Each structure stands twice: as C-alpha cells, then as structure tokens.
Image 1 (cartoon, rainbow, N blue to C red):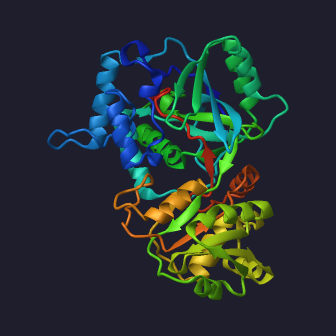
Image 2: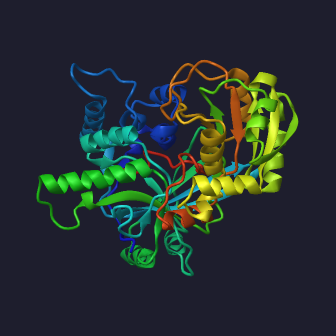
Image 3: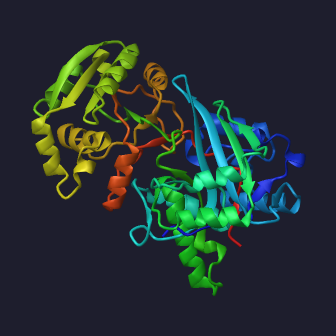
Length: 447
C-alpha cells in the first residue's frame, strides 16, 4: 500500500529572497549550461546552487556536494529557508499551454514511505544509469534532504484524494511562481488533520508509478539503507520516506510529450541507404527534402497514431523518410525481445532502439542522442548542429551536424502502467511529462 504522510517542509522566506519565481529552477537534469548561468544570475539564493552547484568557486579540497551542503546550512541559519511550523501536504497545480490549449495539472506533494522496486506498490518504468545515481547519492547524503520532488502517478479511483485536498484549499490564495516557459506553478499548504488523514486513507490501496525521478528514488532507497546500517534510528524516521508529487492517471492535465532523437556518432547515409537497411522490416516512403519538412512528417506520424510508425531525416541527402513496421518486422521484433511483454515490444522507442539501431543498423555502442521534444527544436538543431558542450542530460556534444534524426511517438500512461506492473523497464527517455516539476518550492529534510 502507498503510505503517505504530511511533513514539515523547508521553504524560502519570500521576505528575504523576493519573488518565488527568482529562486526556483527546473530539475537538474534539464538545466543546460546556458540556463544554469541564467539561474545563477537571477538570484543569489536560487535553488540551482543546491541541485546543480556548478557555478560557485570551491574551497581547496571541497567537493560540489559539500559546497551545496554549506549553502543549505547557511541559508537555514540565516532564515533564508525556514521549516514550516506544522506538518502539511502541499497541493501543487501547474497551468500551461500546449499547441494553443490550456491545461491544469493537479497534484500534491507528500512524504511517501520508500519501498524497494519489486517489493511493494511503487513501480519504476525506465532504466537508470549508475553514474547519475552516484551523483544524486553524494548530493543527497551531503545535504541530508530531498531537494526536489519525484514525480509519481497513481491509479484512477472513484474517490480521488486530489478532490479531497483541493476542497481544503478552494478559498485560499496560493504561492505562485512563473517559470521561463510561462508555466504557472501554484502551491498551497494543507494542514487540516482530517483532510490529510482522508487523503492518506484514499491513497492507501493505490499503486504509484514513478513518472520522473527514478535516479532520485533509487538514491533515496540507498540512503535509507545506509543510514539504518550506520546507526539505530527510531521507527518511521524521515529517512524511511521520500518526497513525491502524486498525480492521478485520470487527471486531464497529465500531458505526455514525445522525445525525438537526434543521433550522434552515426555514419552519414542517404535516404536510399537507410531504406535499404530497413527493407523487409519496414514499409518506407520518401516524404521529401528539406529540414523544415519535419512538421509535415510529424503530422503524418500523429495522424496514423501508431507507435510503430516513425519518421527519419538523413542529412547526407537532406531527405525525410516515413517508416511503418510491417508483419515481418513485428516477427523480427518478437524474436529480438523474446521474454518481453507485448506492450514493451510494441513501444516506438523499443522498436527504434532494439530493432532499428542495434539489429538493422548495427549500432550497439552509440553515444546517447540529443533528446528534443518540440518539432521547432528538431528543426533548429538540425540546422545548427550539435553544440560543443554538455547538454541538459550530461552528454558531451560533438560540435558536428546530426547525420540522422528520428521522430517517434511517446509512450502512453497506459503503457507505463502495463510495463511497470510486469516488472519491465522502458528504454531511457521513453516519456516526457510536461511541464517539469519545479525545484525549490519545498524541500524535505531527512532529520
């Protein structure tokens, strides 16, 4: 069962830092070098100095993690960050626009008891990377806090805990931050014991699926295990919990955007050469030439609405190709992914990586691609080429043009539920829940 609790959050004192918008930041893994520099300039107390901490000078033999912990300690001592006087669940709404349509995603931030994946009612859906987990472990251990909320989605229910909590704040004014993309982030404290208890009871029988923040969840599990090995802690110590933003699967604001791939390290090939390699497993057609045809190609993929239909750009002859998986390709994929569920085998990103990149194109060891979400960004990056710097995912750019790109459909919420419950993991960056949760709205101390 999902065991959720109120907690006394650590939050910025706005009388000392000014606008909430100036001290919050996106999650660490989407902060580019340019965005990071802007956040450092925005406010001396921006939370980027905790979650990323790459722009400050270090003392001799001091690590970035120790520097982040020093910031956190100083900010608490100086009253920049204050612990709320009572425990609360924090209702969090995000209002945003996608393709001219306004959405509001409703959720709440609570402390959730840690359950190792596969041993309880909390499920992962994507693969994680050891290097990133090591980085998050060292930061969490140094700061002894959850600095950013994990994003979890929970099963639909007849009586939603979100409705219960929204009733508790319906006549109250939120704290508000507006991010650089124009997304409005509203936060309320719910301290009423009856409302908190009712929400916790409703969440009890539900499963939570990690939508974003797998590395931080696994890190929180490791921190808990290490702390309990090192010292004797009372039952239900804060280290037994982690901070999760919970959103219902049926929430109308739960938007999943695609994550398109711009590939590094591939040999230049023409559209004819690509189609020759895909022949047999895919039915292919040339759409036309010119980077700007990306919009037309993506519209064609969306109209078909099939995970197994994708569009490729070949820089060598500046041509777009539409590829549709055929019966022979389905059978080949079944053989390559033997033992995997039917849902996993039918994912667009799984077909792309297992069948196309590894099997048909023979790329077993490619650098991670550049991941982009909007078609305008695809067009821009194909025109300009890869930056010669680390991108927001930590991958080193090459400074060269991308020779191959792929537009691929996103996995759905239903896919996440099915694959998570079967104990499988999707390929990395299979989903992109938009917008990202802000860091800096509330921090969960582990002491």
